[in-house]
Length: 260
Length: 369
Image 1 (cartoon, chains in turn blue, yellow):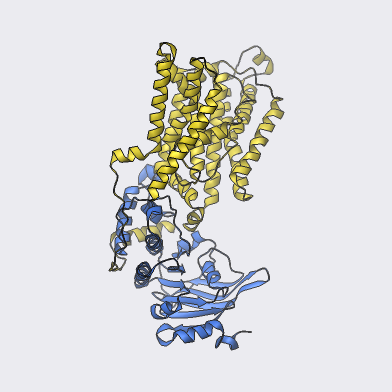
Image 2 (image 1 turned 90 degrees about the horizontal axis):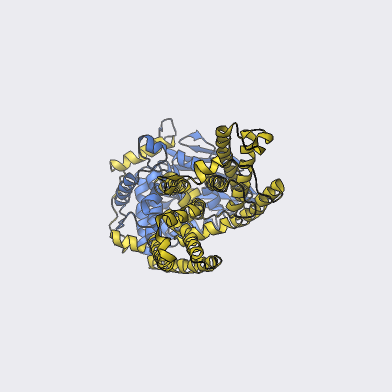
């Protein structure tokens, strides 16, 4: 995707985003920039609006007010599909894979490789190419599966999550959004997912991570943004902050003055 | 634009430009040996259904007088009798793969064949000409009847699909309701009577036509349609999306698939198949049958499930469903030839259904170990 212009480093910009569910204000005017190659951790208590914000950016729900910019261009994200076209992909808390499909079908689901010529026009898939590309994609992310044709159901929880991340990384070229990517994983499997996230940012993707694992985020992310009651109460450089400071903002010890 | 991005991404993959270092630790690799072809065959439900079929045919061949059951003529008659169910079972399989079902195909068939019969007679000639048994516009009329079967079948399927997707109803309830509606409409239109005055040419040219004096034409057409559906499910995007939606609708949506569109399309396709089966009915019997077929939807699901397609969605075995569709007909034909009451067929089919599903569940559980 072409970048260019003055905003070439800003992958996602969110301006004055509000979201109401009836009388409930989930987001009350959020401004946020996520830079190319940056890992931004979105922290907040339950109900702070983290997931709502992520869902608006990835097209799963519509904002009530405000503007979204991708690479400096104002965009109304109409659907998940639309977000995909912009290059924004999401890895979900509960997995985004179809368990009955083989690994390669899952990796390519929604963006299949078709056969060339008339067969392709009749909707015939090029499964051979899909398998070959899947092998390469997984190998390049350090995900070792013995067989690419095995049903996704047969993988371990960590393998499935790694595959879900790999799917998003493979197709994203603007941003990767993750909602609790390691919630269900053990330490060893989590570390592989974190390696994959690092790899995604090294590729130049903006990475937005929602996580309750705040100590990990302080050491892992580039920047920590704290949401509270639907507003951003702090944007901290991870290297210069401490767990205590983040928790204070999150629980309202310091951010109080910024709330109405 | 999406194509462009996809192209770029594929290009990046090819060039290894992910800029990603392989992680140090490998995941615990799954213990999945590649199966030999023989193991794969032994694991498929379709294979075991085939074994059951062969055993059934052998038993009936042995028991029937003069081994008449084994004569090609008898076997092809079985095929002819099963040809409609073949098409419906293939439709049910596609439907189950997407974790939906269509109970209304049987009454869709009745209504469609009724409407096709009306249109056929309307186009063929004046009521007086038809009473006299002459059909001046026969060719045109048959074309119109075929088109009507396909269009109406698809339309009634689409209504099912729209109720399921737009009114967000379980397919079971939605199609239970339309099953009654479609049947009710056919009864209202026909007053419960079969359609008379259908040209015999339809039977001679298609319904009773035999290729090489042996192979019933409807069976050939049914096999061709089933074959196309099998290829479609196995090799195309449509087949992949059908299974993906059945396996996890949410994941499919998150992957950018317009699931409602595909679910409605599947209902339309299954409706078209029911419409085609309706035309088969018309062509074989030169009449409509408003009092039969109501339970065809359930029998089609029975055949699909016996053939190894689960109600859990995500998987389809079209060859299994084709074999499953033959079992009730084989039992019925065999019992009739042996002069045993044909009603035993239902008992036997029910027992087979339980056994088939039990074996399938065991197999499924062993896959997860």
